[in-house]
Amino acid sequence: MELNAEQQFIDIQNNLATVKQRIIDACKIAGRDPASVRLLPVTKTVPAERLRIAYAAGCHEMGENKIQEAREKSEVLSDLNIKWAVIGHLQTNKAKYLARFANEFHALDSLKVAEELDKRLQNEGRAIDVYVQVNSSGEASKFGLAPEDVRDFVQQLPNYSSLRIKGLMTLAIFSSDHERVRECFVKMREIQAMLRQEAPAGLSFDELSMGMSGDYELAVAEGATVVRVGQAIFGKRPLPDSHYWPGMG
Ligand SMILES: *Cc1c(COP(=O)(O)O)cnc(C)c1O
Picture 1 (cartoon, protein in one colour):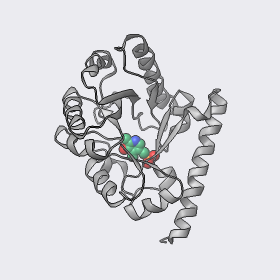
Picture 2 (tube, rainbow, N blue to C red):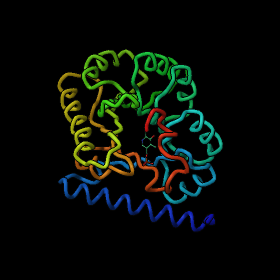
Picture 3 (cartoon, rainbow, N blue to C red):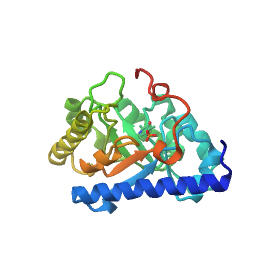
Protein backbone atom coordinates (compact mmCIF):
# COMPACT_ATOMS: atom_id res chain seq x y z
CA MET A 1 0.00 0.00 0.00
CA GLU A 2 2.69 2.47 1.09
CA LEU A 3 4.07 4.39 -1.88
CA ASN A 4 7.78 5.13 -2.05
CA ALA A 5 8.97 8.74 -2.19
CA GLU A 6 9.18 8.81 -5.98
CA GLN A 7 5.64 7.47 -6.33
CA GLN A 8 4.35 9.95 -3.75
CA PHE A 9 6.02 12.80 -5.65
CA ILE A 10 4.36 11.79 -8.91
CA ASP A 11 1.04 11.23 -7.19
CA ILE A 12 1.04 14.69 -5.58
CA GLN A 13 2.22 16.34 -8.80
CA ASN A 14 -0.58 14.68 -10.77
CA ASN A 15 -3.19 15.63 -8.19
CA LEU A 16 -1.98 19.23 -8.14
CA ALA A 17 -2.13 19.39 -11.92
CA THR A 18 -5.68 18.00 -11.91
CA VAL A 19 -6.91 20.47 -9.30
CA LYS A 20 -5.24 23.40 -11.09
CA GLN A 21 -6.79 22.37 -14.39
CA ARG A 22 -10.22 22.15 -12.79
CA ILE A 23 -9.80 25.61 -11.35
CA ILE A 24 -8.86 26.90 -14.79
CA ASP A 25 -11.90 25.19 -16.32
CA ALA A 26 -14.21 26.59 -13.63
CA CYS A 27 -12.76 30.06 -14.25
CA LYS A 28 -13.36 29.77 -17.99
CA ILE A 29 -16.99 28.83 -17.48
CA ALA A 30 -17.43 31.71 -15.03
CA GLY A 31 -15.62 34.19 -17.28
CA ARG A 32 -12.91 34.72 -14.68
CA ASP A 33 -9.16 35.09 -15.01
CA PRO A 34 -7.53 31.89 -13.65
CA ALA A 35 -4.78 34.05 -12.15
CA SER A 36 -7.40 35.49 -9.80
CA VAL A 37 -7.70 32.17 -7.92
CA ARG A 38 -5.00 30.88 -5.57
CA LEU A 39 -4.76 27.23 -4.62
CA LEU A 40 -3.86 26.80 -0.94
CA PRO A 41 -2.91 23.16 -0.27
CA VAL A 42 -4.30 21.98 3.08
CA THR A 43 -1.86 19.67 4.83
CA LYS A 44 -3.55 18.77 8.11
CA THR A 45 -2.83 15.16 9.20
CA VAL A 46 -0.22 14.80 6.42
CA PRO A 47 3.12 13.87 8.05
CA ALA A 48 6.04 16.26 7.75
CA GLU A 49 8.07 13.75 5.72
CA ARG A 50 5.37 13.66 3.08
CA LEU A 51 5.27 17.47 3.09
CA ARG A 52 8.91 17.54 2.05
CA ILE A 53 7.87 15.58 -1.01
CA ALA A 54 4.89 17.88 -1.52
CA TYR A 55 7.20 20.88 -1.38
CA ALA A 56 9.40 19.36 -4.07
CA ALA A 57 6.24 18.69 -6.10
CA GLY A 58 5.30 22.37 -5.97
CA CYS A 59 3.41 23.03 -2.72
CA HIS A 60 5.13 26.09 -1.27
CA GLU A 61 2.17 27.26 0.77
CA MET A 62 0.52 24.99 3.31
CA GLY A 63 -2.69 25.40 5.30
CA GLU A 64 -3.18 23.82 8.72
CA ASN A 65 -6.25 24.05 10.95
CA LYS A 66 -4.61 23.25 14.30
CA ILE A 67 -1.97 25.52 15.74
CA GLN A 68 -0.02 22.81 17.53
CA GLU A 69 0.32 20.66 14.43
CA ALA A 70 1.18 23.69 12.29
CA ARG A 71 3.82 24.82 14.73
CA GLU A 72 5.50 21.43 14.93
CA LYS A 73 5.60 21.08 11.16
CA SER A 74 6.92 24.62 10.68
CA GLU A 75 9.80 23.75 13.01
CA VAL A 76 10.62 20.37 11.46
CA LEU A 77 10.45 21.92 7.96
CA SER A 78 12.10 25.24 8.79
CA ASP A 79 14.85 24.56 6.23
CA LEU A 80 12.22 24.88 3.47
CA ASN A 81 10.74 28.21 2.45
CA ILE A 82 7.13 27.29 3.21
CA LYS A 83 4.47 29.94 3.74
CA TRP A 84 2.15 28.72 6.49
CA ALA A 85 -1.52 29.59 6.65
CA VAL A 86 -3.51 28.85 9.81
CA ILE A 87 -7.05 28.19 8.60
CA GLY A 88 -8.78 26.95 11.76
CA HIS A 89 -10.24 28.50 14.90
CA LEU A 90 -7.62 30.01 17.21
CA GLN A 91 -7.81 30.17 20.98
CA THR A 92 -6.58 33.46 22.40
CA ASN A 93 -3.86 31.78 24.45
CA LYS A 94 -2.37 30.25 21.27
CA ALA A 95 -2.04 33.56 19.41
CA LYS A 96 1.58 33.91 20.50
CA TYR A 97 2.53 30.76 18.60
CA LEU A 98 0.76 31.80 15.45
CA ALA A 99 2.50 35.19 15.57
CA ARG A 100 5.88 33.48 15.28
CA PHE A 101 5.54 31.48 12.11
CA ALA A 102 2.30 32.03 10.21
CA ASN A 103 2.03 34.18 7.09
CA GLU A 104 -1.75 34.13 7.02
CA PHE A 105 -4.66 33.56 9.35
CA HIS A 106 -8.01 32.66 7.79
CA ALA A 107 -10.22 32.24 10.84
CA LEU A 108 -10.49 35.53 12.71
CA ASP A 109 -13.81 35.43 14.55
CA SER A 110 -13.43 37.51 17.73
CA LEU A 111 -12.00 40.83 18.87
CA LYS A 112 -10.28 39.07 21.76
CA VAL A 113 -8.24 37.05 19.28
CA ALA A 114 -7.63 40.12 17.11
CA GLU A 115 -6.30 42.05 20.06
CA GLU A 116 -4.04 39.31 21.36
CA LEU A 117 -2.73 38.40 17.92
CA ASP A 118 -2.00 42.04 17.11
CA LYS A 119 -0.12 42.46 20.38
CA ARG A 120 1.96 39.33 19.78
CA LEU A 121 2.71 40.31 16.20
CA GLN A 122 3.89 43.71 17.34
CA ASN A 123 6.24 41.98 19.79
CA GLU A 124 7.60 39.94 16.90
CA GLY A 125 7.81 42.98 14.63
CA ARG A 126 5.61 41.26 12.06
CA ALA A 127 2.32 41.74 10.24
CA ILE A 128 0.23 39.01 8.58
CA ASP A 129 -2.66 38.69 6.16
CA VAL A 130 -5.96 38.03 7.90
CA TYR A 131 -9.37 36.79 6.76
CA VAL A 132 -12.54 37.20 8.81
CA GLN A 133 -14.39 33.90 9.15
CA VAL A 134 -18.13 33.96 8.54
CA ASN A 135 -20.53 31.15 9.40
CA SER A 136 -22.36 31.20 6.09
CA SER A 137 -24.36 28.02 6.70
CA GLY A 138 -25.73 28.93 10.11
CA GLU A 139 -24.75 25.50 11.48
CA ALA A 140 -24.06 25.55 15.22
CA SER A 141 -21.02 23.30 14.70
CA LYS A 142 -19.20 25.90 12.60
CA PHE A 143 -17.06 28.74 13.82
CA GLY A 144 -17.26 32.24 12.41
CA LEU A 145 -19.32 35.38 12.77
CA ALA A 146 -23.00 35.38 11.98
CA PRO A 147 -23.46 37.26 8.68
CA GLU A 148 -25.44 40.02 10.41
CA ASP A 149 -22.57 40.68 12.84
CA VAL A 150 -19.82 41.18 10.26
CA ARG A 151 -20.44 44.86 9.58
CA ASP A 152 -20.05 45.95 13.21
CA PHE A 153 -17.13 43.59 13.76
CA VAL A 154 -14.98 45.00 10.97
CA GLN A 155 -15.43 48.57 12.24
CA GLN A 156 -13.07 47.64 15.10
CA LEU A 157 -10.33 46.09 12.98
CA PRO A 158 -8.37 49.27 12.10
CA ASN A 159 -7.29 49.25 15.77
CA TYR A 160 -5.04 46.28 15.04
CA SER A 161 -2.32 47.52 12.76
CA SER A 162 -0.43 44.21 12.48
CA LEU A 163 -3.48 42.50 11.01
CA ARG A 164 -3.62 43.17 7.27
CA ILE A 165 -7.29 42.51 6.61
CA LYS A 166 -7.61 40.91 3.17
CA GLY A 167 -11.05 39.39 3.00
CA LEU A 168 -13.49 36.79 4.23
CA MET A 169 -13.34 33.04 4.78
CA THR A 170 -16.04 30.41 5.11
CA LEU A 171 -16.77 26.71 5.21
CA ALA A 172 -19.94 26.00 3.24
CA ILE A 173 -22.49 23.52 4.47
CA PHE A 174 -21.39 19.89 3.97
CA SER A 175 -24.15 18.71 1.71
CA SER A 176 -24.54 16.83 -1.55
CA ASP A 177 -27.20 19.39 -2.46
CA HIS A 178 -25.29 21.83 -4.66
CA GLU A 179 -27.88 24.55 -4.29
CA ARG A 180 -27.48 24.65 -0.52
CA VAL A 181 -23.69 24.81 -0.91
CA ARG A 182 -23.98 27.53 -3.52
CA GLU A 183 -26.21 29.63 -1.25
CA CYS A 184 -23.37 29.79 1.27
CA PHE A 185 -20.94 31.09 -1.34
CA VAL A 186 -23.46 33.59 -2.71
CA LYS A 187 -24.05 34.90 0.79
CA MET A 188 -20.31 35.51 1.12
CA ARG A 189 -20.26 37.48 -2.11
CA GLU A 190 -23.11 39.62 -0.84
CA ILE A 191 -21.32 40.32 2.44
CA GLN A 192 -18.19 41.18 0.48
CA ALA A 193 -20.14 43.66 -1.67
CA MET A 194 -21.64 45.26 1.44
CA LEU A 195 -18.20 45.60 3.06
CA ARG A 196 -16.76 47.22 -0.02
CA GLN A 197 -19.23 50.03 0.63
CA GLU A 198 -19.19 50.12 4.39
CA ALA A 199 -15.89 48.87 5.76
CA PRO A 200 -13.44 51.38 7.27
CA ALA A 201 -10.72 52.75 4.99
CA GLY A 202 -7.52 50.73 4.91
CA LEU A 203 -9.16 47.31 5.13
CA SER A 204 -9.48 45.24 1.98
CA PHE A 205 -12.17 42.67 1.31
CA ASP A 206 -11.03 41.64 -2.15
CA GLU A 207 -10.25 38.07 -1.08
CA LEU A 208 -12.79 35.28 -0.58
CA SER A 209 -11.28 32.13 0.94
CA MET A 210 -13.86 29.43 0.22
CA GLY A 211 -14.08 26.02 -1.39
CA MET A 212 -12.53 22.68 -0.38
CA SER A 213 -11.97 19.35 -2.15
CA GLY A 214 -15.69 18.69 -2.49
CA ASP A 215 -16.85 22.13 -3.58
CA TYR A 216 -13.99 24.26 -4.89
CA GLU A 217 -15.30 24.45 -8.46
CA LEU A 218 -18.62 25.75 -7.18
CA ALA A 219 -16.75 28.24 -4.99
CA VAL A 220 -14.75 29.47 -7.98
CA ALA A 221 -17.98 29.89 -9.93
CA GLU A 222 -19.25 32.13 -7.12
CA GLY A 223 -16.15 34.27 -6.71
CA ALA A 224 -13.58 32.45 -4.54
CA THR A 225 -10.08 33.92 -4.79
CA VAL A 226 -8.48 31.31 -2.49
CA VAL A 227 -9.51 27.65 -2.46
CA ARG A 228 -8.31 25.48 0.42
CA VAL A 229 -7.85 21.97 -0.91
CA GLY A 230 -6.52 19.00 1.05
CA GLN A 231 -7.84 15.56 0.18
CA ALA A 232 -7.92 16.12 -3.57
CA ILE A 233 -4.15 16.60 -3.39
CA PHE A 234 -3.07 14.32 -0.54
CA GLY A 235 -5.75 11.64 -0.54
CA LYS A 236 -8.45 10.82 1.96
CA ARG A 237 -7.75 11.52 5.59
CA PRO A 238 -7.64 8.49 7.86
CA LEU A 239 -10.46 9.73 10.09
CA PRO A 240 -13.87 11.14 9.19
CA ASP A 241 -14.31 14.92 9.21
CA SER A 242 -16.31 14.74 12.44
CA HIS A 243 -12.94 14.13 14.07
CA TYR A 244 -11.55 17.40 12.73
CA TRP A 245 -14.69 19.46 13.23
CA PRO A 246 -16.11 18.43 16.58
CA GLY A 247 -19.86 18.67 16.66
CA MET A 248 -20.41 17.45 13.11
CA GLY A 249 -22.57 14.36 12.69
C1 LIG B 1 -9.47 20.48 6.17
C2 LIG B 1 -9.87 21.85 5.77
C3 LIG B 1 -9.97 22.19 4.41
C4 LIG B 1 -9.71 21.22 3.28
O1 LIG B 1 -10.61 20.15 3.26
P1 LIG B 1 -10.42 19.00 2.17
O2 LIG B 1 -11.68 18.24 2.23
O3 LIG B 1 -9.24 18.21 2.62
O4 LIG B 1 -10.15 19.65 0.88
C5 LIG B 1 -10.34 23.49 4.11
N1 LIG B 1 -10.56 24.41 5.06
C6 LIG B 1 -10.46 24.12 6.37
C7 LIG B 1 -10.74 25.18 7.37
C8 LIG B 1 -10.10 22.84 6.77
O5 LIG B 1 -9.99 22.56 8.07
